[in-house]
Amino acid sequence: MAEELPLAKHSFEFDGIRAYEDLGLVVGHINWPTGTAITHSSQSVPGRYGEVPQGNAYGAKTWQIPVSFQTSSNEEHMETLINITRAFTRRAEQGISFPMRFGTMPDVTYYGTFTSLPEATQISVGTNDSQLTLTFTADDPKGYKDPVTVKITDSMFEYTPEGTGEIYPVFRITPKKDMEEIGVAYGSDSTKYVDVGYDRAADEEGNTIVDKEPVLVSDPCNGLTTWTNIADTSQINFKINGVIDGSVMSNESSISVKRSPNNTSVMYDYGNPLKHTDGKMYGPLIMHQGLPRAVKNFETDFRINHIKNYSRAISGNGVYGIDSNGKCIFKVLMQDTLQGRATRGEIQIGPEGHSIQVYKGYKDWENKKNYNSRVTIVKKGKTSTKKTKGGKGKAKTSVSYYQSNVNIKNFNNTSFFNSGYIQCRIRKIGLKVWVTLWKCNGKNGKKGDYIFNNRVINLKKDQDFDFATIAWHANKTNITEDKVNLETGKVNKEYNYGWNSITSYFVKEILDNGNGNEPHPVVHAGDTVIIDCERNETSLIHGGSVDSLEKRVSLGSTYPSLWGGQSEVIGFNVDPKEVDIEMTYRPTYL
Image (cartoon, rainbow, N blue to C red; front, top):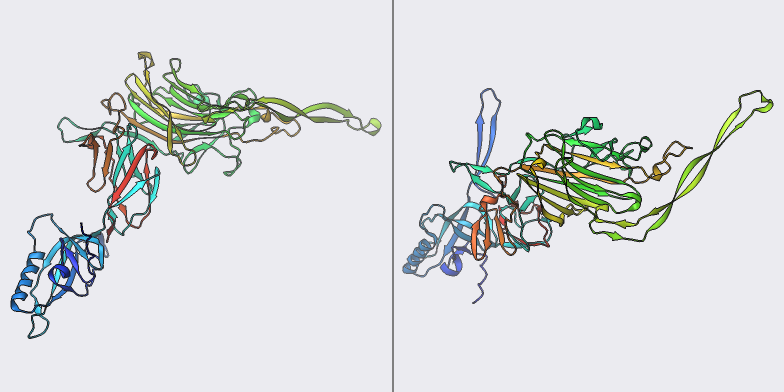
């Protein structure tokens, strides 16, 4: 196939017909329109000085195109005029427009039609050379370039589209394994997203869309206004691992134990170690504001983070699910163990006294060589009394102190939870519970591999529960370094107690079994989900057929556009290692 010749700069191409090459028209200088037709609207208000602006309506874009042509006879002159009429006249059909390219910008296509074909006038008396000015109107004033396809390589993908106008991306997502949910969201605005994986259904009349899994809580955990600080265990109706002390603080993307004595310190306010000599754990506890009502069927997701910086430190944190009576109905913990042993993860489901152990273990266990360490503490020595000269004054009593080295064995093993960032999902319908636990990347927050996926728990009737809110408790326990230095009245040694935080909390109610009695895939391995932000629709390609996925699209999905020349972070709730993702769009020009 012969390669298409480039469009001449002094020409244009309308619906495949070229002005110079096909019709012999010489195109003069085109005064390119700066913008579209603009209609400004405002409203007069009695008593107001001036009007209330109501915005601009941006209409069509119009080009005045001067052309001329030469003919050697009257017959050739008429034939040229007939050809112009045939080439630039189209049947009037609503919603139909035709492509137009200009030689000065040949890679951009506009869509419209000619709205004026005036009479041709002689350039000079005695010749058939003529000129006229054509009017081309693009009802859609944007110009379009050829489609661009971009391979997405990161779950937080920053990209600047070509062009200057609004563009409508189409995402093609092909997973390598079955997936229950696929989401696309823009970093610039939390309302700009498409979430596929929810069921939607019509009501009895068939004309109202009902979200069967309405969101009740979506808390990014970067502020304390939705949380209540609990000062004492007498304020709660459930058991915790230890007692309450210390304080919390909000950060840009988490709520954590407060840094003490200032925000840049590596010390944390779990409470005064010298108050807690009984071996119990201690630290702050906060409780989220209750749901609008307790729910029997629900799904909750939350993330917690634990970082052990000092090998002998013992700290941890956990989320406690609370029912309408204030009792604990599930708990998810990460907890350090004694003498440098690996940090443990633990999940229990069910009411206190009837709970089921879902998980208790050490993910990615690594057993290093044990070693002995030495901790220096200060002890009280002898007390001596010295009389004053002549025995007349008060006797002086002095206390001697001495340092003592304590040899301690350290079990130098670790697990993922030593620096563990996890996301837990608990989904309950009736007496059936599904629990999923993910690893998350502590640096970029990305969800990673499963620790386990959809572990099923079948409750008995006396284990059933409703769900009203959560509490978060961070804690530490004293080690030898926390003992009092009898000479200074302070601890023997300050050290990094450990970082503990909660970074997100999400709840939705499940109505009429939601997506079904069990989370089920929205797409199977090898199938392709197409999210089309131009047509506002989502479809599934599988086995050679194309099916609509609109029933599985969340009601809040907005099918957001992008803008040429403006950078945007496009986030996906899937790992690009597990899926192939492409974005296709047509750059536009205003």
